Length: 484
Image (cartoon, rainbow, N blue to C red):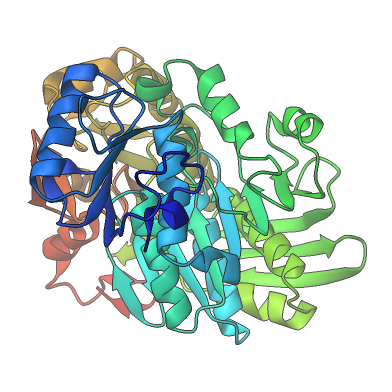
């Protein structure tokens, strides 16, 4: 493809007809014939990376920094231009797909999977991109990020389109919005689940984080919006966007709302009023009030996409549980819940839901990730001891931080006696053995992750496999009715 068809705002005639065979933003993996985009704006490092790319055969380099190379192109916004060039390189496949984006602090993964499964059950062909990877037509690929970089995204869109996919349902992270990974993609509809504290290690202040989320709800990105009307910032969101909006909720007046909500350890039941046009009777495997919100978001999306009432009800009533999102195993009458909750709001939702599901005790095993928002740690400690009957602090993904210091940060928000066992496997075993029949043991923070990060190394590990290994010889170990 010639360069002027990739980088369409180029005004340098020297490069317009340069033939490009690939596109890259990593100087270490550049191939001969690539167009290389350098994201750093630090002069020395930018020169080093571009020099490396050129030595590996890049046809030209694109930067925001003026360089002493004859084949360098200077632009105002390299990330934005990279995203648009990737879209062009992969034949603008996203324009021939129905695009659905879901953003918010919590609930993105579950809502995305709900929408995709409902679409597929109704005979549509939908693919997923998110935290758990890329899924379509029975295929599964790992995703490098919740919302991958533009080159990965647009190649995936083209592959999906070639495989007959009609709808793409994807998670939109705050990092992806801020880093312009999704620039150039117009979403047919987008959901905002909620905004609570997360990623302050990157965004520094909650206001920055919130405003980044809100910036997605712009006509440059989406055509229609779906907003949780019960979220603390719902009014602010509704006041700042200029497009068709639908709201959903349980407490406040909304276009789509749930009534007579009943949650148990086996699932949830509720009635849904759809725009005062019809009432749906929902019985779903999803557990907890916060999952009722996720279900409502999914209903709103699929209603907008043309599913009828029967397809909507059947889609929710036969949903597969989402791995690592309130995944329940019954062990000798004890309920073990594995959940990805890793923010204050997420942990509070899971614990509150668990307390509402049993008249027995709720035990908690959790830690916090290293090299991430430190301010949330003491808040999660406070929430843990306020709601759980007993708490054991352990390692999550310490990364390059000292695990003992992470645990100490959590303990700074705690006053009651609790357990500390850094070895996650031993912590889980201890709390499960401590629990009695009817109790619920929450194992929070990692969900379906298949590893633990210590330093720069990922070690194979999975919470569910840990529970399985502890109880593999017990016939009563079940996962919602099946052996685990």
